[in-house]
Amino acid sequence: FNPAEYIPSWGYSSVALQRFRAFTGRSDLPDPTDREWMDWRREQITSIVRKIYIEASAIKPRVRISADTITYGDIAEGEDAWIASRPFWEVLQDWRGWMAEGILDLNIPMNYRRRVLPPSGARTMFDVWNAFIMDHQYDRQAAIGTALYLNAVPDSIAQIRAAITPSPTGRSAAGWVGFSYRTPDSAVNQRMRPPEAARVELAQAMTIHPALDVLRADDPGSGLGPVFPTLVPVPSMPWKRVPTKGAVHGSVIRQDGTPADQVWVRLRDAVGAPVASRLTTGGGWIGFVDLPVGVYTLTASGPSGGEASAAVTVTAGRVAAFSLVLGR
Image (cartoon, rainbow, N blue to C red; front, side, top):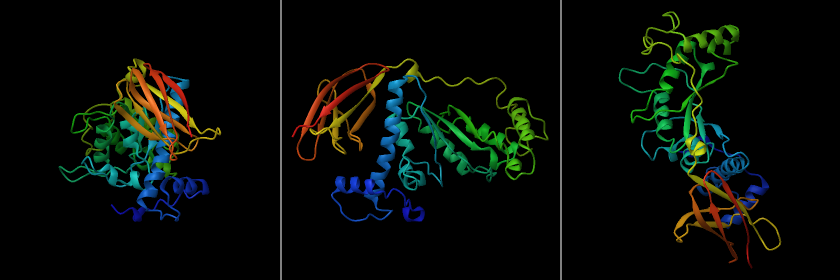
């Protein structure tokens, strides 16, 4: 992968550059494709997602946090494919990492592609992305997003059917999401017919056994009946409905009361074993999710040698709070 092909040239605010230089010790203006600069910016995005997830859960424990995520370009089928993908490099969006960490409840990757019939026995990139999404839900859920506005209704039906079909490894998505109800097919998108007619056709094709003039003869699902013959319930979230784990959040400040930016906070369990370590945000905030119930110790270490520790008790389904003041 050559990141220079899709240069992420944003993120050069004075505050971002100041924080990056403080963290790395560098004084230069990094090139947009500088690996250290890209990794740092990607982590800032992940920190925002993490804070939204934990702070929202602290206010409303059963809230569902979702995000529409990117599927630009191709994706290989190996485990190393993600870190070479365009979402990871071009938009610095590590949604696979968000799912693995547990800071999204529902991932809705926008697998927006026109339907193309593959050669016999071949798989399209739409299918490959579907499988990748399904196989990387971890302990959360993903729903496949398709582009209704790019396809005729019969092609959207074929994509919907593919989106709810298990991957080759046997994993299934939590559901399907179509974009958009306002523009439900390509003819509407091209202003060739009113959206009301397309919405009726789409709804009937999804819920009533479509006539042959609705589904094309080349659709392998044309003889399978409607995609959604009955109402489909919203999937439950067992990790929030019957929680067995909890989370922690808090802040680290300096002696003068200012936030301790980009200092390491290390989390250890009751017997002192390392659990995780993470850098504070610009506001000194830090958080950890999916922690088994128990007592933990958090230790913050400043770059000048200051340190502070606190114990926190994690309970199921709750976010425990703490605060640390760095010593001199």
